[in-house]
Length: 441
Image 1 (cartoon, rainbow, N blue to C red):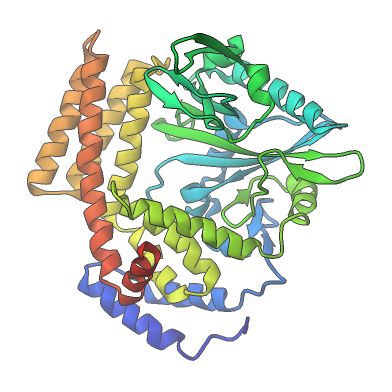
Image 2 (tube, one colour; image 1 turned 180 degrees about the vertical axis):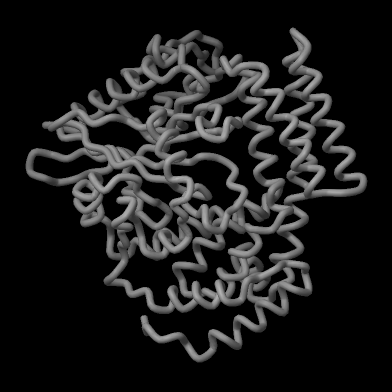
């Protein structure tokens, strides 16, 4: 790409600023112009940037959006969620992903999302799967719960046959979701379609690991507030001849991640060499599939906007990306964080997570204040009323069901407000409206 600022940049930015102002969206023109110039100078052969002061690194486009101000916080949470190395056998590289990796623009991130590359050196694929199963069960056992955190779900393995479990049908090949006690025990109970009871073991699931992900509810060690922390694993098998094979069949690219430790560079470099030359096109195509899904009922325009931002950064639609960057910093998008945190509260209540009651109540109080600051009128009154019901359910023993029901209603109302905010502002910019029409067609 040309390193000089394209002649149309200033004119396009003026149009974007005018459109934003009509919608009440504030844009810092100097900062936006600086970002556009940096994007214009990005070259395909110069894709990785390293912050020598902090040791974090990642794709140059991603690093433009990362702020190191909360790096200590993310590293502290990372110590809870990370998979540890086994010298000579398992090597790992932990990264932030999603809104956590875009902390410069997403002032109100919903969750603490992590992504970890886990490379296993083994004689065979089967042996690599066995080692992965051991590593993940050890992780579950060591981090099932502790001061200020509780593991609530593990995704590991695929169903070898169709089953019904907890009233839901699971097809062959669908991912298996485990509670911490189930993972530690190494078995789950289900029934065949004909009603025959079956037991699926951890070892059976390991034969086809599929999507590997762990989710915790935590009390943020630095902020003292509730958060959902997840770690999605991209697991690869390194054969004795050096060939690297993803165990789920797909090697994730690195267009959304900020790696937290410089010690991870050797593994990162080894994995990146295996990524397809068409990785950008493939990644954009996958994201467009997600945009299409979120623009279909039940719609989630906020999630669609986040994915469109990643698409526009990589396919050269920088002016549209610059507009979306500003949307994520608007006060109304604080409700996106509220929506996510209500779910986290509900998870803590439903799973009986050992989070102190005072922490849960303080979180509800913070959510009420956030809603009051972001809204007014009937929407504010309805959501605050739901949150007060949630708070009452938390204070009364045996009222977990009432609290969960109140949480579900509140989340629905918040999502409706967030959806309308993003829908109106996405559709108001002609290039983005045209893009959404094309994706949905």
